[in-house]
Amino acid sequence: MFVVLVYDVNQKRVNKVLKKCRQYLNWVQNSVLQGEISEANLTKLKMELERIINKEEDSIILYNLRTTKYFFPEILGLQKGGEGNIL
Image 1 (cartoon, rainbow, N blue to C red):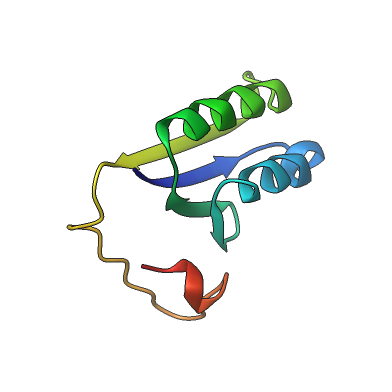
Image 2: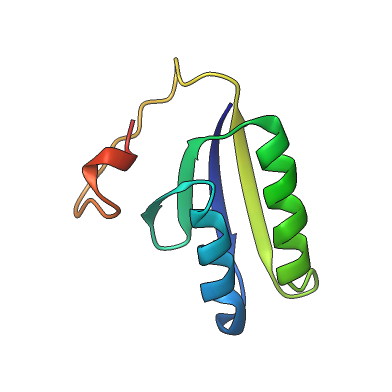
């Protein structure tokens, strides 16, 4: 499956969250990652993130796309994260 992950976490935890997410997904821009991931690895990533974040302060949103057939990102301005990360 293809996942877009967006996070808004306390500054104290930003580096830990980013580091963990980059083990599974590609960094696109500040607080946004995306990529192909298996259901098992997605479950593992969510469990690991739940150990890092404070559920009363932090927010992580996952957009699960079963297929990239209708996913067409459009970039306006500076492209961050490198060309290889955008489908």
